[in-house]
View 1 (spheres, rainbow, N blue to C red):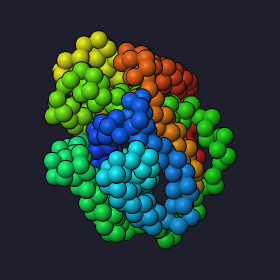
View 2: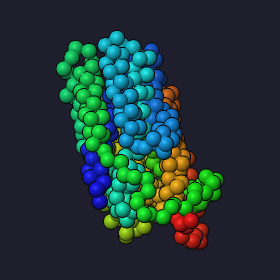
View 3: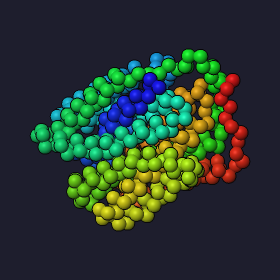
View 4: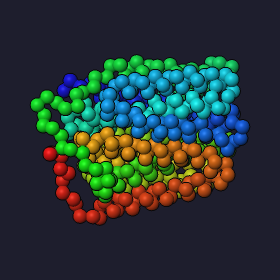
Length: 397
């Protein structure tokens, strides 16, 4: 298939683009605490990075539907580069406001990057779509180490703390923009193909128990991951005095665990089905709370954050695959928009609340705040699995 090379391209773009959130999660709260007028606002820039991503998903997806994916990918990536330049100005001038605005712009690039998996799935035959999405996520393995490593490499380069790190990040974002120029967008409808079935009302799509289970699973994965991951560098490094290198290794291991299982997921699904994969993800998330609730040794953080990454992977890929099986091609953009706005909106709210919860209520309360999301996801999973199997999704007019 002439567009199958897109999958390899998006693996590279995933590695470059996803290095940005890996970088921001590691350094964003630490830099924010140094610039913020109050320690409670330390993770506000990280939250605004997530809000920039969540708030731009809907307009970006609608623009992709109208103009195609490639021009929107390039525009969003260019905006992220502008944010990188603004971050350099903010750090040089020690401006918390400019730093926060810079991360909002960088979040727009992340929002576009979250659509890489869908663009890759559209570039291969339908039977290869799940494998294409998994391969794209493998780019995150590089991002797991490259993003935090840029912080360590760049920090001593310039006299202003972390200014050199953000300069290296800007170079990486420019490289991601250049790589996207090689994307060959496939036609919406292949020559000679039958017209797709018409789109159903969104309410009808969202009434399907499988769709509800898919969205709730993804929402729980992103919310719990964002809340715990955002707070961990502050709790581990600032509160409990672990070294920056130790904190970096925990974050790198976590992000690697988010993406490393991607190629194993199709194998797991064949053996335990999507319901089993989602249940495994929820179990991993619940184990995180026990592992690091009261013991704060390096090994506790490491095990908890690895489990957090694994749980996110199973919930995200399981939810994405389940969702894709329950909408028609004509419904793809609207369902993808609803799903991603929900996931990344909650992720942003969790990042926003992480610093405040940690500062005001403490680490244990922050962990307990994840339980309602895991419970809702479990109820959604049970509601789907315990209902009679529905008829196959009609996808022809």
